Length: 261
Image 1 (cartoon, rainbow, N blue to C red):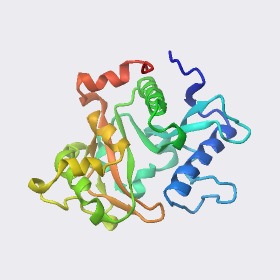
Image 2: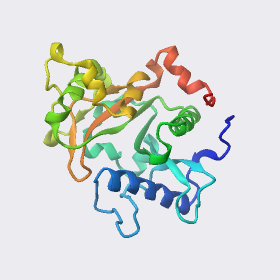
Image 3: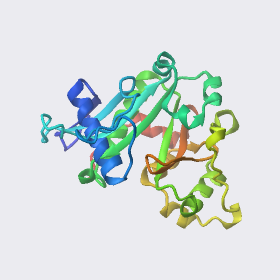
Image 4: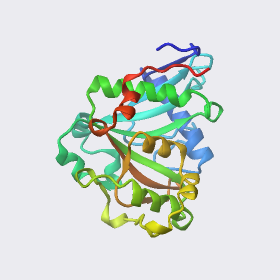
């Protein structure tokens, strides 16, 4: 990877130190910043962890200028779970929120994305571009056809989120063959505002940058949202069919990162 930021490195976590540093970053973002929690969160050690960590692969963005001994060197992270690994473990993380039967019936090579976050000091710069380039390499090397995973809006007040959720429902719903649906016992409709009353500008202002980025790449959402009260989020399931992407969007998977001037 050619870059004028040689202190950055993107790779899969190699050892326990990398994993702990990823969990420390997740704690900073999901617990300290966003107010989330979970059964396996270690507040004393400041580690955000769950039962899936041992089976996911962890794509990490390393800043070599930071102290690995202090678990400070990971400044960006993605969790990745291939279909093969999920089959061995018994399920995907998202199955706690969504019925993934349509994806499983498709019989295509998949990877589930999750726990994506970037250190506060690196937001707005090139960190996410480095991570996405690493993700692109992973997709190409593993011959992945479908990427999916839950993405979150901060907070659980559906009324406050009705415009962006309705926009996603009316304009970015996944095609029927891939349309996963929130588990029936937790189904939260996203059809909250009639299509002709959706304010696109307000919807976009209320949509997290990561979700907007996936939409620009041709992403879709499943049907219904999931209210995750312990994590203090409202979740949607994002899906990307790499085979159906336009040539413009496919450029993301074939170009290498070029540092911006």
